[in-house]
Structure formats: structure tokens, C-alpha cells
Length: 537
Image 1 (tube, one colour):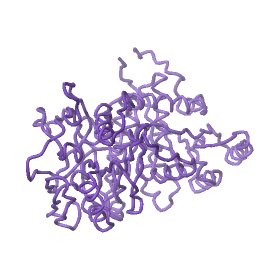
Image 2 (cartoon, helix red, strand yellow):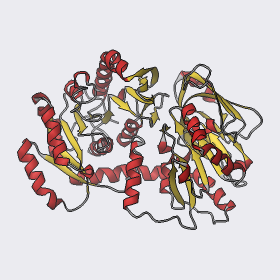
Image 3 (tube, rainbow, N blue to C red):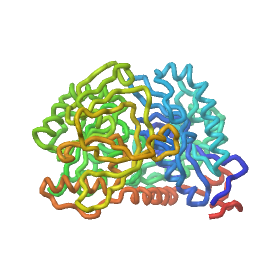
Image 4 (cartoon, rainbow, N blue to C red):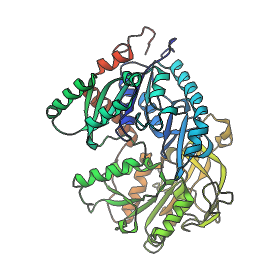
């Protein structure tokens, strides 16, 4: 056990020259490195904008990146690690989630002019609690600290670094081009006090011979008077989920550049409908690692191809995304695939709702459409309500089990506002209960049914995000499809959760070997590794 430190935690902040430069992954890497070195470490991001959220143990919602970083630290995630989450709903409008619970839907101007003063207090209090409980807090910035139109009310970058007394490492993505200009330009826009907070740079996602980059590194250090702490080579097949769906575009570009092999005869073609407001896309990460799966996204009808399986994902605006399916022709194509072609279809959360007969939103909680026809592939009807269900769950699956086999144990989490009822008797493929201490879900202490399945499981849906992260269930489902398609089953297969834990160590080893950790420890003014006398393993 480790005793709590009496002093306030040391801090370190990762900021970037732009969005998507790798701040979240580098923060996770540093968290794991510090934990490996014996420091009781926690992540922090004051405000996160993401549709890819994470449910804490007590049923609260935070940005997925901070949940992943908490996992890298080996600790339970709490809302103090991401007290404010913005979930875009429409252009210029986002749902504001404060300490894991929906606060209000606000447009950008109202949020900036009216809410940010309140947010500042919330952020400072959350950070203060973390600093009283941990040895080191690793902070992650948002976007760029050089956004001159936002700096006066900043709660995510340099003002936060000041509140936290945090030295800043500035990260730039060399893969985007213009890396030296982005670093120097960012520093030029900062005030002298802010520049003093920047203790060094990390150049991320490098490909090639670093010796060819050395003249540029020397110039940068001479020009700025600050050290390059590390040049981190690009790490393929990272095995750790991305923060948000913006990364899907870069992944697709990488695949094009890497001469991706064609689908083999032994693979299942598994396609996910890429909805305009897609959320929780990490639900499908394990499928991208399965060797017998050819995984891809369908954005337009022209992308359809010849799938074996079509998956409907989560959405931040189910009604608007359902309209998109109808207007784009994808809804009719999915219906034909499922009904006329005996295709395999599954939906998670919003995707599960869309598979039903009707979706009702009489009070406008999701959109200005009070009623929409679903895909009518499941005999269900969903009504949207003002309350959001956010809870971790565990239980078992009854679909695709072999005779006389043991239960397939599952876990995952729910985040949804709709309530679904059945229009006729269906198979409920999962039995779950809440995995939380939150009294709001005391009634979930007993297992209850979740989801719906028809056509012997060929079409099914569930509210459980992360359902495909359950290795035994995922393999049983894929093998049933393989059996129907005349393919041999795969024995064993991917152990995704074990691979994910190993991925944290692989990432930490990779970053540690290319980063001057001695200087990092010096800027935090802590020992390397942990030398506190009160540490007892």
C-alpha cells in the first residue's frame, strides 16, 4: 500500500502546437512511466471536447482519454480528472457535462461568455483535490495555447498551467509538416511569462533517420533557448484507443499510404456505418485487431461493397443520424441487406435504437423531430427522456453459446437518454447488473435483461458499450458467422484486454527510450525514480 503524501502533488503539463499532435497518448505514456518509477500518479484535463466518453465506477461520464490515462496509472477514474466534458450535438451547440452529469446544452458564445467564470472555480477545485491525493498530476492541454481569441478566458492551457504551478512541455507533430514553424510560432504568440513556463519540446510521430533532423534540432534550441527533450518515432499498431473520431481520417490516410492488403477469402468483411455524429467508436477497436476480420467504415452508399456484417454505432444525435441514413439511401440498403440478403446486423446504443420500428422525441431532447421511423429490424420503440443513464455493467451473454458451455461473462458501460420497450416478445441476449456504488442504480443490483435479438441472433442490439471488448463473446459471435458462411472457426483468438495492458508498457518503454526523463524529473523537482520513504509496495 502507498500512504497519501502530505505535500501538494508535483505537476507536469503537456500542451500541443495544435489538436491531434499526440498529447493524449504522450500523457498516457508519461503516466505509465511515472507509475513504473514508483510515483502515485493521476491524469487531469480541465475541459475535454469529445464524443468518445468513459463511464467511471460511480456512473459518471468523462472524456475517454482521461479514462484511458487513469487505466495507464492503474487507478480508478474519477470526474476530478476531467471535470468538464463538452459533447457536440449540433453546429456550435454542445452538451456541457459537469462532474459527469449533464448540465445544459449551450452554444459556443453562451458557454464562453456566461459559463467559463463558473467553470474556472470547478476546474481549480478538482485539480486541488487531485493534488492532495497523489504524488504527481500530469495535465493535458487542449488544442493550442496560442489561440489569441480564447486566451483571456482560458481554462485549459497556460492559465491552467499557472494555477497548477506546472512546467509545460510543448508537443509538435512532425508528420503534419512545418514542425519548426509551429513551435517557434506558438512561442512567439505566448506572453513572456507563458514562454517561461515552457521547459522544452517533444517532436512527435517522427519517421526516418533522426540524424538528418539534427541540424533543425540544433537551430531550434539555439533560436528558442529551450531543449528538445525528445524526438518520438511513430509507433505503429499502438493498441490504445484514440480520443475522438478525428483520428479515423488520419488512420484511413495511413492505410492508403501503406498499401493495405485486400480482404482474404478466410476473412469476414465487417463494416461500421460512419454516422455524421458517431460516438464511442472505440467499441470496434478489437475488430480491427482480429486476424480473421477485414474491418472498414461505410460513409456513403458508394462504400457499401460486399460486407458480411454491418454494425451501427453510437451517436450523439440519434434522430439526426437516423435522418441521414434515410436521406443517404443507407437505411434502405441496410434493410435489404438484413432482410433480403440474410446479412448479419448489430447495433450498439444509438445503433440499437435505430434498428427499432420507431423513435420518439416529443420534448425535443435530441432534435426537433418528434418522431421518426426506424429501420424496423427489431420490434422495439424508443422514447427519449431528459435523464441520462451512465453506469458500468457486468453480466453474461446467452447468444452464440455452444451446448453445455459455461456462461459467457461480459462487462461494459451504458451512456444513453432513450428508454426502449418491446412491441413483441424477443430474445434478450444479455443479462446484466450495474457495477457501481451509485445509489441511483440500487435497483440494478439484480440482473435484468438487455438488448434484443431476432433471426437466431443474426440481428441484435444492445445498450452495452464495450460489448465487443469481451473476448469470449466476440469470438463466439464471429465464429457463428464463420460457421454460417462455411468458414472454419478460429480457436483461441485475440485477448484484447491483455493486449491493451501490454500496450501501455510497450508505449511507456518506447517513449522512455526517446525522451530525456532526467530533465523531465528535474523540471518537476522530484527524484528519479521515486525515493520517498513512505512508499511500501
